[in-house]
Image (cartoon, rainbow, N blue to C red; front, side, top):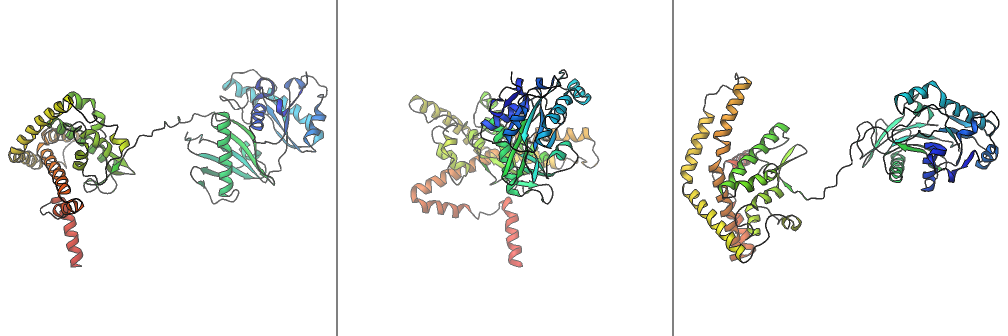
Length: 489
């Protein structure tokens, strides 16, 4: 049995160790790491010279060489053994055998024994040895294709140092740290690498990850010929799981809500708004005849009618459309429902085609018209009694506002009790605003469609002229007063 294994034959980790097998895989994948060969661990079990070593060394060139360990358990997915074995750099040709024997002997050191006792539980054994052509590095370092500290997989982190990377790997010197995501960002004003070089190293780490099918920790070096990969091993620290791809379309719009929640909105305020919208609009669709079982089955829709993006609140228009699709008559005229929503452009077909019941025909249309008629009668009744509903709502509102409750001095229990009281008397009985808003939506949609039918595009312009500038609108008052202040100035 030959004790020397050529680079292209170093495929089995049980024969050549983890580092050599990884280097062979990189070479076969076209990465072109510095040429190497492997000395089996069994070659050092006797004191005689290693047969074939001189010829293999001469085949690599004049030197110098890097002489490194490649144990069976080294550079594995569970334990890296990083820094546990001896490594010798810039070794001349006539010093390779002595250096290789020292590397093999380091497998029996107290340091390795302690590491294995704590990590791998493996027994002490001498490693195979990699003899590799030395790169005359101007810059060297390490790179991780995922962030081993935060666990994030959407970035590469790397460290660079002038000259050889052994001091960086051993922890004797600090490197220049970079984070590469969409852009390459250095933690300090860069002096070792350029941004382009950092991007190239990150690309190299990502390519290694693709080849091995797992996030990689690589060593690299840059010499006069360019960038080289020196080794690659799995990252052994826990990482975040891969992001699940989600191609579903979500549309956010802040029309009509930015006035209520301007600027940055805290998580507490946002969570309260989500809670309020869910309860109020569940009550709204129930008022229009949607069965409670259907409402409960769509709890997620009502619980996500808002979105918070970069600290600002938006309507989730897709879920508003889903809520509208529950109403009687939706399958008869989807376009009219969109007009009621007040959106300037139609919802994309990839959204509308997958939401709500399809357009109905035959007996289905009769059944849907029956539901619509029943809901219509209920809405007419609500419109007739709206003055009374509004009066009772204002009574409850004023009672809540003028309750005399001492907010400044009340304790947590009293505050919670007062909140629950307001929630039950107002939030769960938000009938007058809901009925009024829905009647306005119906009137807006119907009048817009009618004018468009009569006058075409001119009808839409006329509709805008009629609707804009109406007086006695509380929400428009701040803008009107600001305009007056501008005229005064």
